[in-house]
Amino acid sequence: MKLITNTLWTLLVTMLLFSCSAEQQASKGSANHSDQPKVGVLLVNHGSVSENWRNMLLDIEANVEDSIMASGVVSEVRTAFMEYTEPSIATQLKWFDQEGYDEVVIVPIFLTISSHTNKDIPTIAGIANNPDVKKQLESEKIETYKAKAKVTIAPLLDYPSVLKKNITRRVKALSDGSGNEGVALIAYGDAEFNQQWEEMVEDLGKYLKVQTGIGTISYGWCGHLVRYSSEPTKKAIEQVLELEDKAIVIPVLVANDEYFQGEIIQKGVDMIGDKDKVIYKQDAILPDPYINQWVIDIVKQTVEEVVL
Image 1 (cartoon, rainbow, N blue to C red):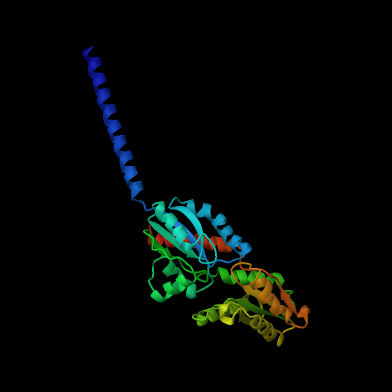
Image 2 (cartoon, rainbow, N blue to C red):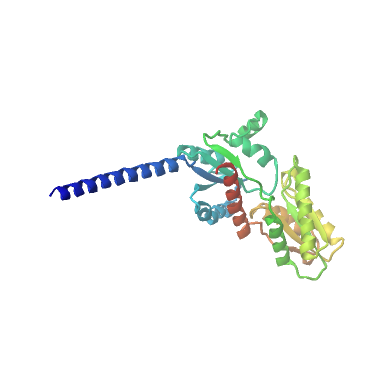
């Protein structure tokens, strides 16, 4: 009887020690989990009054969300429009704060550096504090908000080669392979960073020449820099037709907008007397699965650099 009692006592002590150890491990695991920062991703684009344009950007979020969140490091992926419509950057950053996020990675879906990416977005997100920029934003009724969370801005779209491959694919789709064609690249442009925009389209042109064998490349602007005029598009096409039989017109614009592709660029095309000499499709950089993959990769890279 005494042997049985001692055995039971030993068993009870063992179970008690095991239970305490398990609780300690669970507590330790919970503490480690709470130490991991809560990370959100905000895909930021220019914004547009065009619903079609906005939907193309919202599609990126839908296409990359699962892949970005698969690692368990990022808890939420959202989209913000810099201007024209909600949800705005300020609205989304407020949401991240309300939900207790520690880190927010902003991914700008912009082609290259501009006053928007260099000044506006950092100011809107509370990273920069330029009084002149804030005053301009206020006049445009764009809200600024300094988040409690740490905000980091990822590199721009022209950072990898994905843009070059996108433009090349679209040129090849319209080319007849005759060797008597040239390409007119039509981009938005930016007055303050004109050199960088020129470098971007010139770099695209060099890549196109190597990949397609097309030797004549021109470019023109269609945005605020030229007051949304169709004339630069017309001139870019004419420059190509001075040397080639046909001109392929490629909008170097993120998404398809009825105003830019449908009116500004289209009117420039229509100004050319012989319509058979111009090949134009009202398309845009999006949709492109490689752009989606770029977003996934740049989020992973940025999170690893600034969070982990």
